[in-house]
Length: 120
Image (cartoon, rainbow, N blue to C red; front, side, top):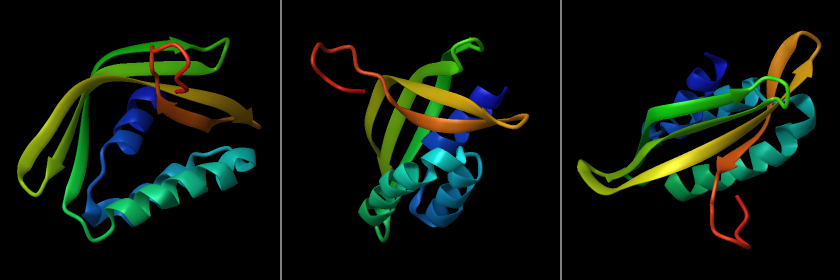
């Protein structure tokens, strides 16, 4: 359930909820990863602020490895400009986790690529 909720939080955003989006992602982020993740989120904020670009993600499948503290979601990522869908792509995203005390915290997340030599 945590993977599902975090995927919905991290992959659905619009210019009207960017500040909330960033603050909520940082709230669930492991303290040791907050600086790096905040830097990446600020880049997205700067790119989208003042635009009409929104992103939605519909989960189609999910894999969770509780021993490795890694989870993946796959689904349909839509990019919308104004009220027009400009792209619909099947994508997969990986989330890595760690414990802070008894709380599971996000260490990192990103799109998974299957192309040789390409980083995810």
